[in-house]
Image 1 (cartoon, one colour):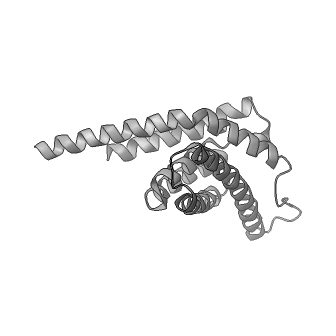
Image 2 (image 1 turned 30 degrees about the vertical axis):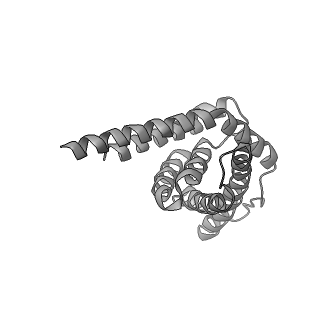
Image 3 (image 1 turned 120 degrees about the horizontal axis):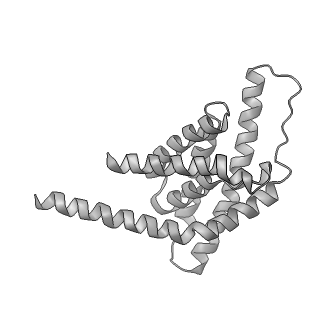
Length: 182
């Protein structure tokens, strides 16, 4: 239970940072998706079956704090996590420099899929509300800059995320050993 609460707090802090802090440093269409990057990282390390709950929780938090219709970020995060874990199972077989480059490629693909899914879902939600005259482009005009920003942020946070996951695994193993001794 404490593991789920710590993951909830971690994603809550990421969402708050993405929604309130990063807009001060980046243009509105170029804000890096911290939550998306972390979800892609975890989905490549653990697989879809362990990360879909995190994607669901992060999507709910992102929908609430970004004031988008409930379900837009949930569905886009689930789709990105599914595609990233599928591609990671196919292409990430060895631990080498190619793995890091493949992870950057997955961030690029994940960013494009997330942007495309959000635009499509926002079109669907706007047509359900019968909002006339609102046209969304298929891709944002600054998608290239957003991909670049996400890739750079991923490069910066990759090693701290790796250390965080290793620390969490060691902490979980100590708890397991302690529970088995009793």
